Amino acid sequence: MKRTICLFLALPLGMALAPAPPPAAPTARNVLVVTLDGVRWQEQFGGAQPELANEKIGGVADLENTRARFVRSTGEEARRAVMPFFWTIVATRGQVFGDPAHNSAARVTNGLWFSYPGYNEMLGGHPDPRVDSNDKVANPNITVLEWLNGRPEFKGRVAAFGSWELLSYILNVERSHLPANGEGAPIANPRSDADRLLNDFAADIPPYWGATRFDAPTMAGALECLRRDRPRVLYVMLGETDEWAHERRYDLYLDAMWRGDRFVRRLWEAAQAMPEYAGKTALILATDHGRGATAKDWTDHGRKVPAAEQIWMAAMGPDTEPLGIRTSTPATLSQLAATIAAAVGEDFTSSSKQVAPPLPGVVAAATPLSK
Image (cartoon, rainbow, N blue to C red; front, side, top):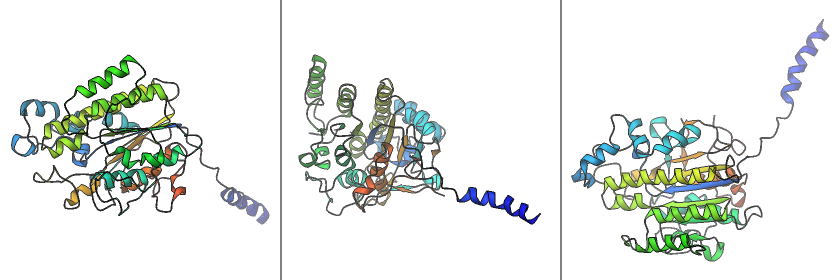
């Protein structure tokens, strides 16, 4: 009788000691990355803030129209009004980081809280004290885009489009040789009358912020690149949200968020309509820094505006479990670079000990859910 009991107990023990099967490799072959510059977490998670939707504090020109478009009775309704694609598709099919109400604040770690240091941290995977201004200086760090372009499977299949002229410096195109369209004509090498017409249209738009262009030509160029060149990694840097906030135009800031959301929808739907991308593509969204939290400083960011440390990020794709807003999962901007690589089955942390790990649980094969 004792022998029988021992055998019965040994069976589960042996099963427990059996090695676990290796995690499945990601099924996504492509990744689309879109950033919206300087979008506050307050609007991202709570929609239009009524105290800012006025003429004195928010510089709102058409108060009735702005409130009709964006102000709602609840935060959930308000955020869907501003970012409908994000909250009806991305948040329900993917994961969202950065909501303080869910104990999941996301933050910038570079201590400076403005654009170039933010993009360096976001794409390089770590902050760098050498990157401490928005000057036109070539980035000394290798970004995840440059690193992926150096992998045999991605060589010549990485592209970037931006509304900010510093994009080429952030990606250090002289060293990386990445195609990075950040100023001038949205299509660098026009091949058709439609391409030339788009470039002419972009040139006819008044240069309101100098070399910094409006987002519509930027996304139009990115869409043409997607359809024509079929990149496996495509990065789009949108910037109007930051520009209108600095202008203290809360109405146009909200409108830029809304149009940015529409641009993301357009990019995603265009990809899903092509066999190379449908069901094989991840989408990652983020901002480079936050903004002030009060009526006085919501237009600003930087080291003197502590609230600008807080940001948000999101991801969805075939390898991302639909968890919605993550709870009790703090995150940092530096984790985005490795997340971009992990989305297509690559390990960017192997490039340097400084690179932060991917966001937990976004790609199950890369990182488990935090316990």
